[in-house]
Image (tube, rainbow, N blue to C red; front, side, top):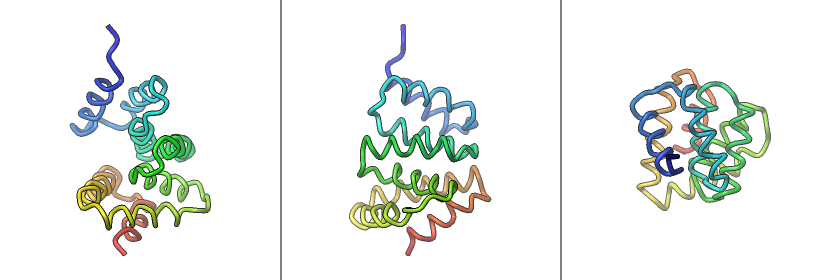
Length: 139
């Protein structure tokens, strides 16, 4: 029996949280995104994984799809800003500004974003783009 998209996502997310390497999770999140093309969380997760394995072009495409599915999702906006920084695209500031507004209004989302940033810096300590985004969001 084929697993549901939700089950695949939950299992993939748990594997990520357990420390599995991002490279091995990409195929799972690509399958989820292919099966549920309007699932912003799946595209957001896929873009994050691509960023962690230094595939900024793929991350950019996935993050753009995530934002198109849900233009108010802060992590999708952060991933898009990161991919834009890493591919030398312009327009990063508008995404950072929107995330700052969301963080100011929602303490839970602010905490989630901060945890995601720390996770990214733990997995990829020399991630200069993420360090820049962290600094901007703390202003």
